Amino acid sequence: MHIPDGYLSPVTCGVMYAASAPIWYKATKKIEKTLTSRTVPLLSIFSAFSFAIMMFNAPVPGGTTAHAVGGTLIAIVLGPWAATIGVSIALLIQALFFGDGGILSFGANTFNMAIVLPFVGYAVYQLISRNAPASSSRHWIGAAIGGYVGINAAALAASIELGLQPLFFHMANGTPLYCPYGLAQTIPAMMLAHLTVAGFAEAVVTGGVVAFLQHTMPYLLKLRLRKDTVA
Picture 1: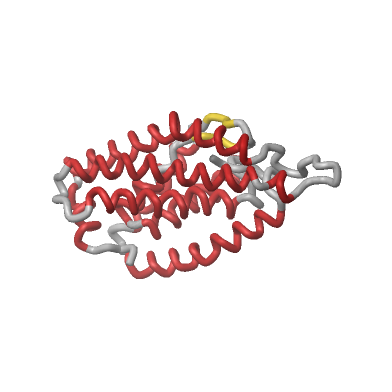
Picture 2: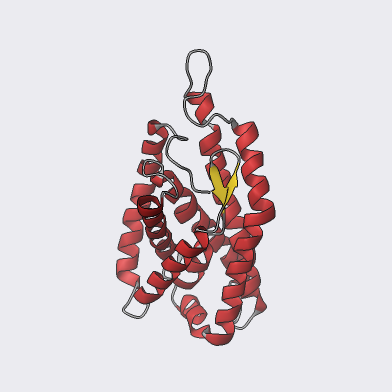
């Protein structure tokens, strides 16, 4: 799902930075109030986990890739605001040191994977698991479904960003200046890859880790039930 530089116009990149910036600011303020010496190491661990699983990606037609992200998992344990910061840090390191995603397109990649994904995934998780005991299977089922829906929402956002490029940014003869594929190509290509492959990978990772935490460290889930750190 990483969009490299050259596939989005500078105008689009600027718009996506502008859309992401206030969310980064608010997320920073939120986690300053909610994270403690106990949970800061957890955010670091989950951010590293997100970085690691995003490195296993497969190319998708249209100039992007399909892979798991782990954003919904971080949102479930620490809240979606913390997930925004954790995934953003992972994306920044990938862009700066590994060339996975561009610098200009960093705002778009962050918007898709660090904002849309965790907030949508967490909302689905909450809808399914709300008021369930910490040992209930609704937690890992909700986590799996939330992860699946969240990553597909992010993929849809990325496909729209790419697909709009030839519509708005082209030469006088119609030749696209950036991404050469329109919405009729980008949406099917992105959604097919994520609905059939990456979405299930995200579901397995998210649901599996939550199920593991329920049996080994249930206090992490109980913490999320007692104190909602996203308010």
